[in-house]
Image 1 (tube, rainbow, N blue to C red):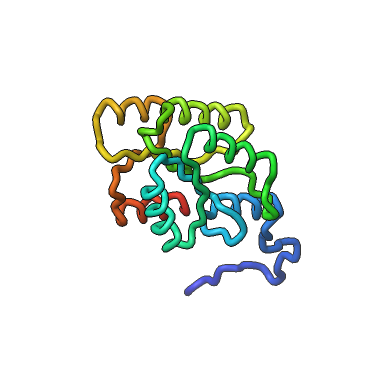
Image 2: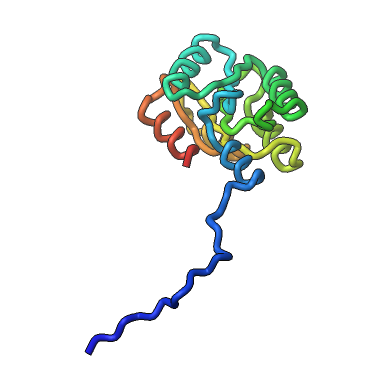
Length: 169
């Protein structure tokens, strides 16, 4: 003799499927790199060719980026984006590509960005240091200053793809 499971005669009318609340929707948009509205990536490098190559690679993934050539320009763009959010309410970058050999100290720039994260002036993001050479001392100083990843130039397309996929969740 088999017994049937009784799930009840009536359904619960109080159960509604979850909707995207504005706060949750903002979080989804905030962590999406491929945004049609504004850039979520900033590239800080003193070499125009390196910036152009990285922007071309990011464009293949439909990722917009802003560029800066000095430490001061980088901080100015970050603070300007924070004070003047886009129409999609985005007020910060999600991904920071910082050249480890900027004329002024890249380590100081990374520490300043981390300070902005901690003071909640800017939403947290991923900081990636870039260098044409991979000296162990340079890598250690960058990691000690708070970077999330280190990438060498010329850029490896597979490595860049993995980074973008990781950040996109």
